[in-house]
Length: 472
Ligand code: SAM
Ligand code: SF4
Image (tube, rainbow, N blue to C red; front, side, top):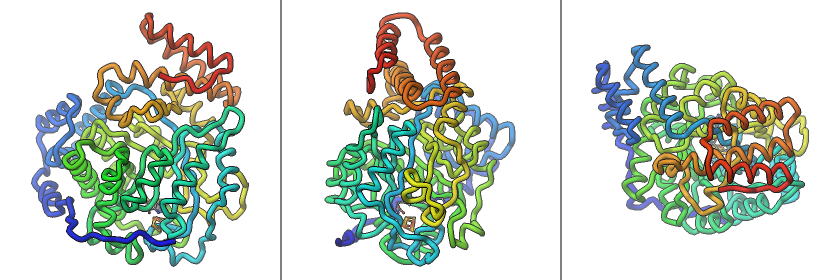
């Protein structure tokens, strides 16, 4: 199977490195009024400019930092409400032609056991995930000629085709190498949700140092990777930076410039932004001595800053982070988290004693999906498996939630309740059931009486009587 042909002729970087550095230098010691003005701009639902983000990044006064965090909490509460969408990652194969120094899958790592799921093994993984109650997946692949667009397409089709009991996968997102336009077109045909490609680091010299060989070593091919997706008709894309390779302040500015590039070129920003911190990876020295380690305090600050800077975008947080950090930053407007994740290839269906040797890195949050749902419900959130927008052809749901008044009340909250109720009936433990019921009751209580509530109550009755997959 051929590797994609890389052609970067005529491409230029849209990350203005010198300008980022000068903005970060010019905005040190910002005054209180300016910081408050910027928070207010974000709360009035406007995306921030790079200079404004730099001001927030340079704010270190503890009281003002708290105001930034409170701004992020307010934005989340006012715009998105208390839902948290849940998903699971599913690793399809860990063969890789690249040598990313931070990753357990890199080519030169002889400690990794290489494994690609067969279609039957993939079917078993999907069944195991459905048995736990998952409805939304992200399929993850190394970069290898085996994992070409046709293969990705076929694995997505397989994921949608497997049904067990009331279980089904209703949305499949992708995290894989960037493709060429034809490749993206083929993958789109399988009905994907979001296509994610993380830039890892926007700082070109660092990028080159940590990606010494392989297809991924070309900065411009990767930087323009999702432009090709847009041109191929995929407008639901996710960007990300791997924190710890270079200064986080530069990276979050890079994420903002990437967002602005999409807005200016294609008229819409990214659907989601991810900001994983580097975790220990098998045989990776870099992960033992992380070059620009991000402290917990800086991490929570940067999540709040990203929330304010790009208020219309979904923010994704993964089980790489500890329960304590997850609980703290969820309140700043994280919209999606994974739960009950296992990142060994084939790990959901089998209890493989060598799973760690097939994993990309080590996870910090090992709670089950049932446990996470119970704890979220206890903390006043509504865990959601909603996939309604994607399936009703309403693309860019985070943007609609943000931009259309009443959208969350009309669609998101009722859909979250209906999917949570399905989980309660089909998969939840007795303890979690009690917590879910309490949360649903409190949501219903807070809803004004009227047609919308009557309609939801009818659908709730239908789910209680065994109907599934009802949504607005
Ligand atoms: N192979 C494809 C690629 O590199 O784009 C897609 C999948 S890769 C397995 C998914 C992401 O995992 C990478 O983009 C990177 O950000 C992240 N990753 C790699 N090593 C990591 C580590 N040690 N800790 C945390 N995240 C890591
Ligand atoms: Fe391969 Fe992706 Fe890991 Fe790099 S990050 S070594 S491309 S799997």
